[in-house]
Image 1 (tube, rainbow, N blue to C red):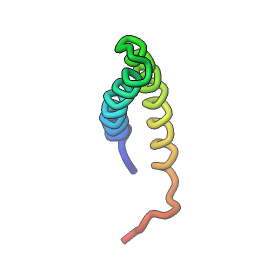
Image 2 (image 1 turned 45 degrees about the vertical axis):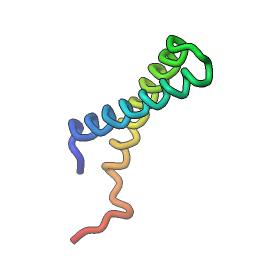
Image 3 (image 1 turned 90 degrees about the vertical axis):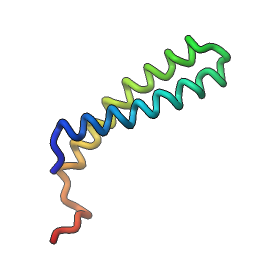
Length: 68
């Protein structure tokens, strides 16, 4: 089972990568760094929360794990 700290670090790192990508996509799509950045920040906040909960749920499910 993963610790909450490990899950949180994984979520933060993954979402930092996503923030950078979404900022560039937002900038490319809107032509505005402010709008692209706002879109990315909102998406990252939602994604971080969802990813953390998702990982915590799956850490408690034994299905598909190899033991031994």
